[in-house]
Length: 422
Image (cartoon, rainbow, N blue to C red; front, side, top):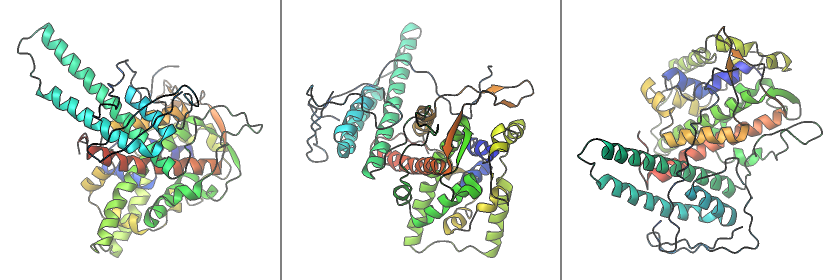
């Protein structure tokens, strides 16, 4: 596996240019329901791996009524509780997030009902805050007022992030798929970290036939001629694997977004037909975008990374783009104009970006990346993990599905509590 492929995929997270878009294509109010304010404890900003630093219990009973009048009742008993049970890598910290975590453990099918009530309460609080008039006087009162408003906005953002996360986790549980746990040093005698179940068939069945073709192309770009090899083990930089995972989450988000539009137009029989010229243009785009753009020395440093020489087999013999196969959805997407493609390849909300960052960090840890005086990435301190190619495929499939689910739940939450800006 070429580390350049991995780095190139990850760099698209914060880039919204048309070229990056093509690279992404390749590579509660009830009286008995608890009301929470988000945890006011300050948190440190979390950046994804593409950021560089310059440095060397309880059971719950839930009853449902009508949609508007439904009330989730929570009661606790000291026995048969599992307070330390964790079903996802990211531990939610806000009061709303912790409450939803308990429901995920005890009654996961009722998470959407609990979420709807919490969103109603958040909407009510936001409306109340917006009606308050800003003090006319300047000075301390005005500064304090604005600071309080900023704290409340941050609390709502954090609550929204964890609501999105709870809904994504619940969708995995509905599909009877367990998320990969935090990747740490393995107790396995072989040293492999991928001791989790494969579940590839379940993950692949969650996507349309056209989206599945695109996912196979994505896997071919990452794994190359190792795509069919599930047993061989490689020693790989944990940082690189984390970058691939984050980029694959974004890819899944993008793929779900365009696949929804594709399926709608297919049903309505208004799909555009691709001419031979269009196909030629698509192949040219593939060739132009297989090499990560704008990475400069970092790309060269990644290419010469130690793991590349030790990676037996490497990428497909024909290069990065040789694993790409024609697909109807890919042809459809490449018919978009640059502005549309850029818009579809971008994450719509800061909350969704925050969840991608935090989930990836919870899964792989937070690395320290150093820059050499020559401006290249110092990879000497990278932690190496042993993982099979089948384990890598499982991680990528989960990431793509996570991104797909994130698109769905973001749209669901926005329909009840508007927060998406575009």
